[in-house]
Image (cartoon, rainbow, N blue to C red; front, side):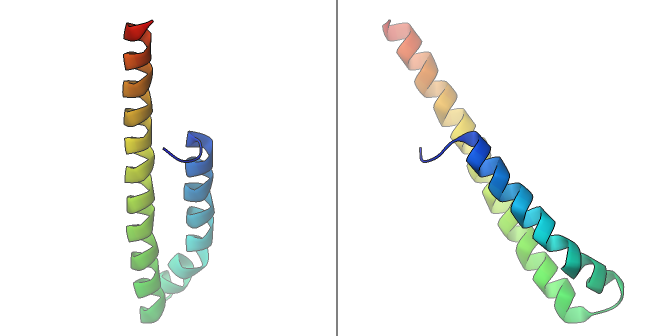
Length: 69
């Protein structure tokens, strides 16, 4: 488990902020921007899944530590 949950959420926010321009261009009809937006959304999905798994693993580790104490 590397970093913190806050680090992972910050990465999600940064990616989401960067997506805005391509979404606007895609809405205006630029096909290439739509492709870039889809790619960024896929990365957003991957990062969100990693953050979710991070929380799950951290919680399991904490639960195990509490049982041992």
